[in-house]
Structures are given as structure tokens and as C-alpha cells.
Image (cartoon, rainbow over all chains, first blue to last red; front, top):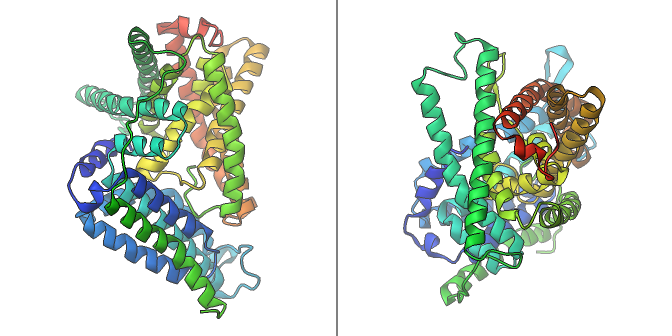
Length: 275
Length: 212
């Protein structure tokens, strides 16, 4: 995952209307869409709501002038665990349906149920919408802007300082991780090279991990001492300058929130026959 | 084991967030009071290191690969389960918001599984076993293994409560898979602890650490 760090960072330095938006606006809109998507019950109501959100995402992605390849690359990294759970769904019953109709019988007494396939599709769609908006947020907002935006939105000072420190050093350790891998490779060490004894590979990797731990602890000590020299103390916090919200950001926020809130409400009202 | 968004309904996710926030507040208090002086930045930098450690691909005999969770290692070396809560919270926030690995609404559940359960099980099983057998390395191995397996089982129970994965199948598949991966977690925790003890014994002998 750490290899992806520099790829993500590169995307955030592009220029587009979405990239230039205030980080606060992007955080609020993305989180609002995710909460709205999660709050939509596991029912066919998900389909029109997710369809609208997917369209909204597509518009924002095009406005961000990012390649579909960027989206695909990032999606592939995230999918495995979620996909495993979704795939298993088609073979099992769940508490959201009362009647299950088998549509295929498989060996070992396994069945594929129509309702389970529907539930798996609902889960997949919800999952895809949520991660799409996270991909959008982190591909169009610099990490520092995200942090400052979260601070301006009220994230406690303890967190902005510690997260800021962590984020700064994630890149340092990203480079360190890359260098360690290169050093191992130049010595013909491959973690998946079956010609090497398994115990030897495991011991080498354990030492690598132990070294990373010690190096990060020692970096922490140096950083901490350097901060003390510069007057760091119990009351220190990350300085976040005040930033006015532009009318353009306000307009975008209003539109985004309207989509996030109104979409599930309108489709729910229409499903019960009130609209 | 990173639960994604939409796999736990919003109300249940909110409950997990509240529980996680209590532990986060306690871990912040630990960082302020228990560690000598004000060493919060040190733990923050260490969290970045744990993030890199989690990226190391470790081979598993039948051809797949696994990653360290690192909760037991952090808790044992820093001498408190709250160290794992603190470090894993930071790691999970970055993983969730930047990479989409683990959801936003379910981040509370993920913090409970990996930080709270992983940290507490790892730390107290290490402490108990080390006192009983007087050998820190087998104790660290079992602690690392247990921290991962119990965290995976709790994750399976949460998904079962959410209705998105059956309990028996979840306990069996998550339990079995992580029982195997856990051998890696345990082995690496023990060897890394040995390396840290050899290279920097002061880390483990300091008041913030556990004597190995």
C-alpha cells in the first residue's frame, strides 16, 4: 500500500476546479455521500440512490480531469477483502430477507439464492459508491490540505498535531521501505523466492520489520528532541491559519449537500408513494 | 480485516465509534501522562513506522501473502495496550481516508478490532505468559498470534451482528485464515522483539517498556 502513497500524492498536484476547492468542502461532501449511502437501507431503494451518486461522482471525476486509469488502479488496491465477503453472500442466507428462492444447486449442498444475489449486488453497489468518493477525495486534495481542512472543521488539536507528524513521516518511511526493498533485491533476496529456505526468509523479514521499528522509534526520538529545542511543550499545537470560504466553495457545498441529502429522501418518499 | 463502509449499518457503526472514542480518549491520556514528559510526537512518528511495517509482504507457505498488524509489537515495546490503540488509530485514519482501506463510518469498529482488541489481547497475554514461563520470546509469539486471531473473531462477530456475514461461517473462515496468518504475526513479533532487545535494550527497560 505504501508504494501507492507517491502515486496518490502525484494526482493531488494536478490543476482542476475540484482540486482548487476548499478541502473542507470536499471532506463534507464526500463524508455526507458516504453516510447517506450507508444510511440507505439494504433494499432495492439502493439502486436509484447509488445510480444518482455514481452520476454525481462521474461529473466530479470529469471536472477533476483525472484519468479513468487512476480510478481503476486505486480501486484494484482496495477491492479484495470487500469482494470476498460480497462473493460469499450469494451462497448464504441473511437476516434482511425472509424467503429465499434457490436459483442454482451446486455440489456440497450449496445453493445460490435469488435474494442473496440481490443482497450481494446491493452490498457491492454501496461499497463501490463509498470507496469511489474516498478515491475522489484523496486524489484531488493534498494530504496537508486535508489535515488543515479537518482542523478547521473542528478536529481536536491533539489529533491535528499527531496526524500531521505521522503523515509527514509516512513519506520518510515510504522512501525507507523502498530503499530496504532495493537493498534486499540487490542481494538476491526475494520474500517469495521458494529456492530460499522458508525460515530464512521469515527471519530476514522479521529483522527488516524490527529494523523499521527501531529506525522509526529513533527518528521519533530525534524529532521529539528537535521539537523540544524549538520550544515544543504540552500546550503546543499545529498552527492552522484562518481561511475564508469563497462564494464558489459555498455554492459547491450547497449543491453537493443537496445531492447527498435529497437523493435518498426523494427516492424513499417516491418508494412509499408520497412523491 | 479492514471492514469497508456499508458492511455495518449506520446505527451499529455509530455505537462502535462511541466505544472507540472512549478508548482513543484513554490512549491520549496515556500518551500525556504515562510516557515520560510529552512524548506524543514520538508515538506519532512510530505510527508512521508501523504503517510501513504493515506494508511488508510476508509469504505464507501455500503461496499467498499476509501483513503484520503490529498491535502486539507496539503494545509490548511501549509497555501499554493504549500504545497500540493510539498507534493503530492514527494508522487506520490514514489508511481509511487516503487509501480507502477500511471505511469511514466503520472506522470505530476497525479501531476496536485492531487497536483495542489487538493491543489489549497482545499486551496482557504477553505479560501473563512472560510471568509464567519466564521467556519473553515464546510469550511474544503467542501474544502476537492471539492478538490477530481474537481481533479477527471479534470482526466476524461484528459482521454477524450486522447481518452481512453468517456467524458460524465467519468464525470458521476468519478464525482459520487468521490462525495461519497469526503464526507470521507471532513469529515476527517474537523475532522483532529479540532484535529490538539486542539493538536497543534501553527501549524495553525504560519505564515506558516491559522488561524482556
